[in-house]
Length: 132
Image (cartoon, rainbow, N blue to C red; front, side, top):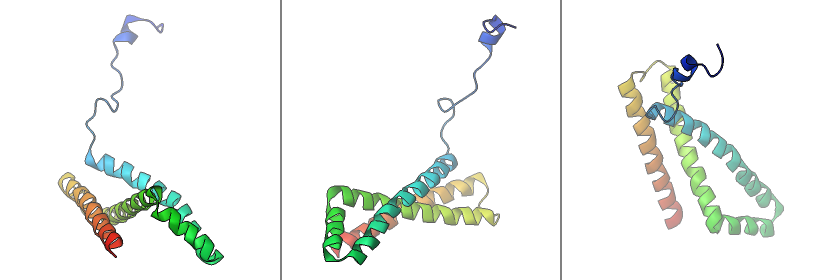
C-alpha cells in the first residue's frame, strides 16, 4: 500500500492533548515533577546563602540585597510554592503507596487538598515573612 492511498488518508489520528480533557491527577503529576526541578534549581540560591554566610559580612549583605530585590523575592516566593506543593504531593504519593486513596473520587479530593494546602501554607509563610 502506498503512502498516499485513500485507506491511509482516512485512518483516524491518534488522540492527543487537544482531544483529551486535562485530568487533575495528570496535572498534579506534571506539577510534582516541575516543582522537583524548581526546588533543585532553587538549591543554587541556598548554596549562595551558605557561601555568603561563610564568606563574611560583605558577601552576606550582597546576598541579602539580591533576596530583597524584586527578582529575589519572586524566586523565593516561587521556591516556597514549589516546596509546599512538593511536600504535600509527596505525602499523597506515600499514602497511595500504602494502598489508600486510590479511587478516582478520593484521588481528586486529595489533589484538591494538596492545592489548597499549598496555597494556604505559602500565604501563611509569606504573611509571617513580610510582617516579621
